[in-house]
Length: 413
Image (cartoon, rainbow, N blue to C red; front, side, top):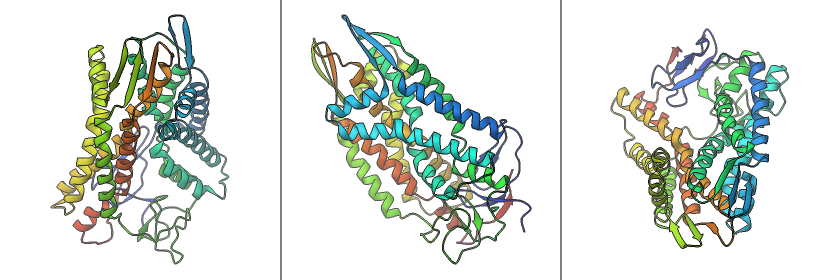
């Protein structure tokens, strides 16, 4: 029997004995190099306090105006919720719903659910619906894009600075503080919460009830159950071992179809007293470069042009090269997949920028920006490529290398 809890690498299924890496340390998979877990220097009670601070800052960022704009005697103060409402009132329902979920509702739920579970663990009283709650949190987390929204606010402010006098309001300061707090709280993903509950003796220990199956929902290593459900979280474990390649191909092809109008059609339409002009995604990058903001121009180009193309090509390459040659090549492919997962949500940057610009330049008769047809198409590209990455299973290649043998056990480090 293992001398401690077991943890399975999510990218190659190699089993490790979970050890304490020390303050600010991390444990990596010996097989593929994936970071399995990290340990900070704060206690659980301090993390709970940080969660409450994150929730308070989120309220400040969403409730108070982000900026105040003035042009020829007209004043406009703007919150993110007002930007969403304006987008909805103008009939851009799909874009409004997409950015509202990704920038408001999903981050709010992520913070609230994480804080609730951390408090329950700290109080040593787990709720009976802990399994469904953490499964919901796991599904929401990839779609929570508050950090992308913060960068979009900065890009929008730079773009609008040439049209109106701009004054920073408390909401913007709240968003920048939220960026740092969310980065820290983001370490408490679903598997980290299960490990904390495991260390507190509140849930069954991974690996203590045999080996043979790994629950994708909570990461618990266990013997196959007669009921077909995880003994720890209750999630179903009777599904197929790997995701279907046909589903990933279908999502990639659909994303490629939407990518054409997303780049050809205008993403926003600008009306001023000087006339009307249409702007594509690449045109926005060039405009930022002309304003002298070359750093933001590079960021937008990478997030909105380079990242979507890279995701499509990388996933297609991984699907076509599904027969690994050796462990070194498979390790490189696993790292490529991890990079695709990491950059997935940042392509939503331009969609956020368009919604914010449409609200910031809302001075009828002087300047007005409308959401172009490319915005919804580009949002569809982001959603489809993220869904394709989630459907792809990097463990397939490692199973082929092992000859479909059970994952080997090593000691974590």
